[in-house]
Image 1 (cartoon, rainbow, N blue to C red):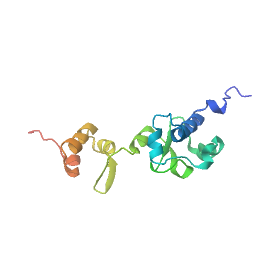
Image 2 (cartoon, one colour):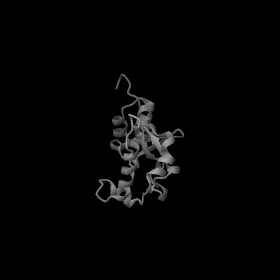
Image 3 (cartoon, rainbow, N blue to C red):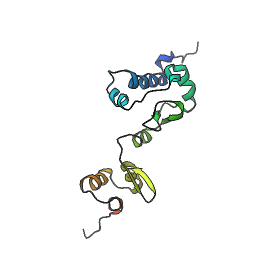
Image 4 (spheres, rainbow, N blue to C red):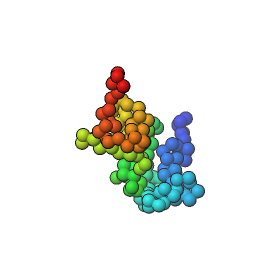
Length: 144
């Protein structure tokens, strides 16, 4: 037996699979209602860890997490990927997307793209109710 042997149940990918199932099945999980009301579940094949692992092992990494590409669709091979934290945050159903100049981005993405604080963009958009163009293009001048 190799020195680095770990039972499957102690692996990170197994824990991710368990958490995915719990979000969809366990009424005691905090966000269960979010999934239940939106009818989000996982494919029958993924009821068994073996098949989840077979479908998802190729791109698995310890620094990535399981992400549904379309937040309104179920967990399955066609709709899941391994994603970093930034990608995960930009794929939340609660995000506000802004389209401007044929680009569609979240406020956080626009913030990074334009080098403007996201709090500034949020204030312009939600509090001041500025037009999208003004939110994204307004620059302060030295004279005020």
